Image 1 (cartoon, protein in one colour):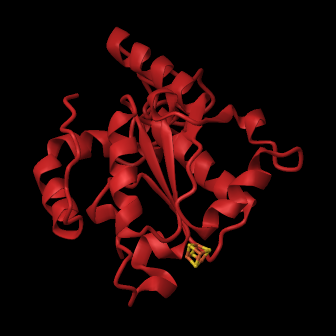
Image 2 (cartoon, helix red, strand yellow):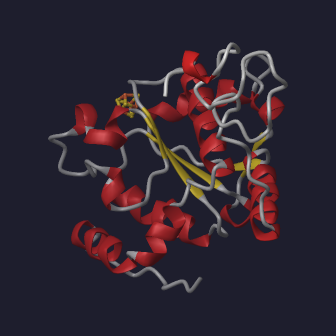
Length: 214
Ligand code: SF4
């Protein structure tokens, strides 16, 4: 039946006469994507993730030449503390491990040990091309090529070497991922520990690291 046949007053596609008071059930007049209230568990997880994201504690450990950019990050020009990011010299109070560039096999062993001493939740930021694909050290006999095969990487910041602004952008991405509950590399590490161990042992010949239980 056409709109005009209904009478003199034209009708909206939903059948409501034009000019009449919009009705709350008229689906053509209101957006359908209304926010859903969170459950108690979801609310607690949201708050916990928000606090975690706003209080990142970086392990003060430079593994490659890219770490030279970490210094300026803490100075007054870039001032990482205004984002809630700070640093410390011990893995046991740290939540973020930055792998800054190339990683020699010798250093990988110490990095694995440091990572496994960090409490959960913990995150890895890979800084520089060398951690992503080997970079200019691709042919080196003593460095690893793809970090993600040995430790779970949450955020990559590429470049050679990335400036502090790029690192801040990487931190911002990490914070957003933590708030959304998507920065779950540490869970992946636990669930696939055998696979990571096999890769680690393949390159580290003198394996004598303790086994941690989480
Ligand atoms: S990406 Fe460039 S700055 Fe970073 S470790 Fe490799 S060579 Fe050095």
